[in-house]
Length: 152
Image (cartoon, rainbow, N blue to C red; front, top):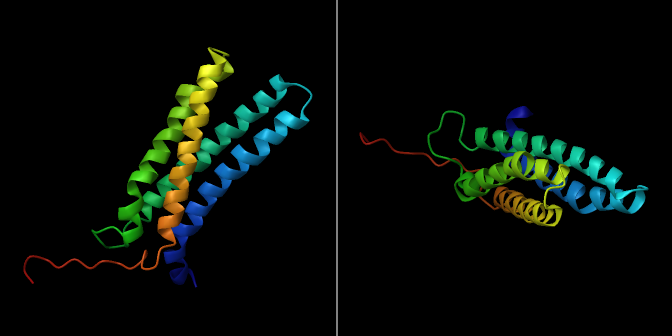
C-alpha cells in the first residue's frame, strides 16, 4: 500500500502547501479582521497564524525537495525539474516574509509599506505553491527517467 502512495506524495504535499496558504491568507485572516473587536488584536492573531504558515511552507518545501528524485536515482522526476525553481522560490519567500517583513509589521515600522511588501510576497509564494501543485498533477510527472551510463 505505501509503495503505491509514493508517486502521489508530491501532489499531496503541494496541495497541503497551496491549500494552507489559501485558507490562512484568503479566508482566516480576513475573517479575523472582520470579526475581532480591534484591528490590533486581529493583527496579533494574524501574525501568529502567518508564523505557523511559514513552518508549514518550510516543511512542505523540504519534503518536496526530498521527494524530487527516485529513491536510488540521480535524475529528478519530471515534475521536480519543472517545479524546482518554484519550490525554492516559495521557500525563500516564506522565510523572507517571516524573518524580514513580519518583524517590521509587528513593530509598526512604516506599516503601509511593509504590509504591502508582505502581501505581495505572500501572493507570489501562493503562486509558487500553485505552480508546484500544477506540475505534480501533470501526466507523466512521476515517471522515473532512467539514465544510461557512459559505458552502455
